[in-house]
Length: 258
Image (cartoon, rainbow, N blue to C red; front, side):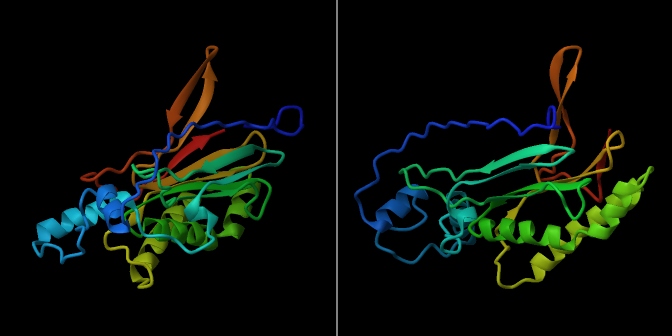
């Protein structure tokens, strides 16, 4: 949303009520077993060798997200916020870890990027990455780091200054960035992404006043929407298409003009 009258944005206030059940007083094995629906036996015995049983256990581990991220990494252990503005827009962002059924705080597997000026005041880049699986927080952190690193700042700067930006060129580059990050992640043996991953939905906002564009790209089922006023009513429009299991996408990019 553009600043009104050039002044600073209002201080948004967010409140959340979280009910925390009293932590279990049982052993660590008991708490893990309860949290994961029995994925671990209380005596620590060997798991069932049946692949179908093992798959169910892996899925429980994925849902519970017990794997902890790097110590001291606020992006995986709690609440992460950011806000800013320039002459074209202002933004705020928040990511917050949830809680296990027994009241223990989950690993925050979500990540985001928020560059109000990506090498140029008329270029902004935003994205949300919803990690899943036991190593989902490592995957989302990897994608958060790599997408801005690979994006071509010079290309985006040149197109933002053009009276007629070559949106096709930006879109093709954006898609190639997603593909390169995906391929690099699969080749990176330091992160086990066999049963873990992340959604990735991102938008590039570029152009001068009166000639602003939003180019979006996504993989997975996180979603970008835009709010607008029409006939005195606030409405919302989806700027990305969810990718669900069984849905096939080749390469897609959406554009919103002005």
